Structures are given as C-alpha cells and as structure tokens.
Length: 551
Ligand code: GLC
Image: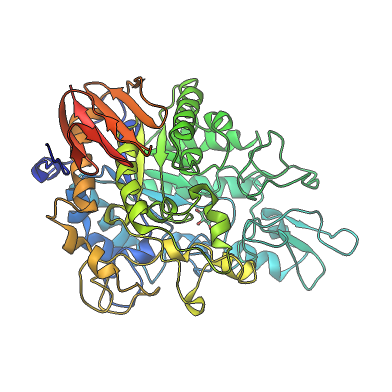
C-alpha cells in the first residue's frame, strides 16, 4: 500500500527571484496572481484595518508562497461605503491605508521580492464624495453634471426600470427633482463615458500609477461603462443583475466599451510587461471580445467559478472557455474565489454549490459540510493550478479559510446587506481578516481587534500554524505553486485523456492531472505522483481527490 500526502518541494526555488526580463511568452499568460483585499490582509498601524505597512511586512510570505504578482483591491482615498470601490480621489491613497509615497516604496519592495503589483481601476463610477460629483450636486445647471448620468424622471418616478446590482432602483432623486444613475450603491454615481473629460482623466490615472511602478490594473465592472444613449427599459434581468447573457443589453457589455479599452491599452503598452485585466461577468463567447490583441490582456473566467462540483459541468466550461479564448489568441484566467463570492471551501460544502447566492438569502441558512468543502477545495486547488493559463488566488484560500457565514448582523458592512433590507447577507463573510498567528487580539492580523470579527476557529487555520505541516492547505498550495513553475508554466498544451465521466483527466506536457469527483475510487495513471490533494491507496484515487503524475 502506498500512502502519499502532499509532495514536498524546496521553498528555496521560490526565494530570491527578481522579476525576470520579458521572455518570448509574456509573464502574465501563465502567472499566479494573488488577490489582496487590503482592508483584511495585515494591519501595520494597529487600527484594526489592513494597510500598506501590513502588506509590506508580509511580502516574504507571498514570495515563499510562490506567486508571480498580487492584485490589490482599491486603496485610494474613499469613504469605504463599498470597501473602496467608491473612490473619492484616484490620485491619493486613503489615510487608513497609507500614503502615495508608501505605495511607491511598497511597489519597489514587491519588485525586489520578485512580485509584480496590479492595482484596481474603478472607472464605472466614483464616490459621491468625489470632487466631480460634489460640483454636480452644487449647481443643477452646471456642466459638471455631464460627467455623470443625470436625467428627468418619468411619470413621477425614475427615468427607466434599471436596477442596482445591490438591490432596488438604479436611480436616486435629488431635492431639485432630477435623478442620477448608480448601477451600484447611491453613493457610487455612474460616470458618463461619452464625456471627454472623463475619458482623459482615466488616461491620467493610468499613467500616474504606472509611473509610480504599478504593473497594471484589474478593471472593475469592465462590462458596465457604456450605457445605451436612449436609456431604454431593460426587457428582463436574469437571476443575477450583473451577470449578462444578452447580446443587446442597455447597460451591460455594450460594443462601444471596446473603443475605450483600446485607448487604455495604447497607454499601458508603453510600460514593459504592464497588463489590463477585465472584471466582466459575461458569457465566454462575449468574454473573448475583451481579450482581443489590442484590448485587455486577460479577463476573469467567472463561468468556471460559477460551475458546480461536477465533472461533466467542469469539463464543458473548460472546453468552452478554451475554445472561445483561443479564437482570439488569448490565454485563460481561472479563478475560484474573490472578495465578491462565497469562499469556495464553503461553496463546495453546500448541498448545491452553484446556488451560493440563494444560500446567502436563506433566513435560516443550512450549515455547510466543512469536511467535504475542505476536501474538494484541496482537489480544486490542483485543478485550478494545472489548467493552462493564469490562475488567480484570493487571500486566505491557501489557508483553507471558510466563509464566515454567521457574522453578527450588527457588524455587517456590505452595502448589499443594507440595500437588500437585511435579506441578503452579502460579501462580508469572505472578507474577514487573515489569521497569521494562533493567538493575539486578531490572530496576528494586527495589534488591535480586527474591523470584522474573526471566528475562534481561525486560530487553527493561522498561517503560522500551517507552515511546515505537510498535510496543511498552505503547504499544498506552496508545493503546487513550486511544481507548477517547474513543470507546467512554460507549456500551454492541454489534452483530455479517456476517463470515467465523473473523473477529469488531462495531460499537460509531461504531467497527467487526475481529479476524481465521483463516489467510486478511480485508477491512477502510471508514473511518479508529484503531488496529491489527499491520500492515495493501492493505486486508487479516492473521492474528491486530485493528483499530478509525471510519466
Ligand atoms: C465589482 C467589485 C465589487 C464592487 C462592485 C462595484 O464587482 O468587485 O466588490 O462592489 O464592482 O464597484
């Protein structure tokens, strides 16, 4: 009997890696990019909120994990009504996070650790505290209003039937009788992208941060910027307001968006290795439009994230994504979790993982099965990290953090919770600060209690507790990242191998990857097991277990 747990690989390979020169295959095509939700990563000044100083102090951890880049959620000056996606000044860092000088020093330090830094660009809307919106409010006849979407109402109500992603109408009426558009919170008025000043301003924003060393931008609500000029009613929204499945929607995924992206790309191309990454909740076929050669470099594959733990469904979404993106020569960008969705270790423990949004609205939510969720999350990590293309990790998934789904209502902060009249628990559960140590007021997150309370179980999941424990999620990720770099990153080849329908089996160069999603044990291919997500007995792979095998 052979018992194999996670294979070990030397951490040394990951250390001391300065950013390599531009190779013939651009770095981002196969990169592992780690998402930092800065409020919740590490608190350097002891005020309970994460910040640049905290993040900087953890660069060694990220280097040892083996990531190529980080994407930092918005750190700009903001009232934080939507966690920073309500930007009051794109050229300033929020006091709670640091200063522009600290940001610049941080980026330089990250580069010294071999880690590129991608920032978050929020172009669909500003904060209502942005100078532009304040100017628009001050004078109804001011041209300042043309930077946003102001309109007269219809029949005593809003101008049309558009809905806010966070719940309720997408329009708010001012005391002067006019209405303004906000596809998200009322504190996030939508910008008018037909306005030249708006367009010019964002080119300045790009240059400003690229000149400060940034390696690119993840672009927020990339499918939202342009609205139909006549603003007609939406015929029917699908079950999720911001997930688009129509080719002709009045406020999502409009073709004119692509002209804007080309302007941005022309700027970004002046900076070696800099990238644009789209957050666009559209079908793979439409997603391909965003990653044409003169537009975004990559775009998150949310169809993959939304797929249940089911071999046939995963196989079909993988095929569909690879087919759609290869038509425009783009690589894929796989992702399982982010700051907007239920953490996948919890999702996979739900009776129906694809119904996580409905679960957030259950008044008496069913308890996820933690053992199943963790087992699948381990296998899913080996799936995510072995598919050809880039992989995005969300902070804490490498620790196997669960969604904190039972937060006290009094501490909830997400506008979704408030806009849904306390019927949708929203996204706070995936944003609880990271546990670094087993003890302390916030498990090493900082010297104070964290801005969102951490559950006692976080003590056992702390990075310090997992480090060096071969059976831990952290060591699984570290090992997988090192092996990926060694065996998989340089080669985009992919070939399905014959297998039982409940098993995914494919070849990536010299490595065969097998993920068993069925109830029965599955046979293993011949070769050396270089990593496994769980125990392998007698040449058989158990349920919800994955291996990489070298021929
Ligand atoms: C994106 C962000 C989300 C934010 C929204 C509005 O979907 O990921 O966190 O609330 O845009 O900016």
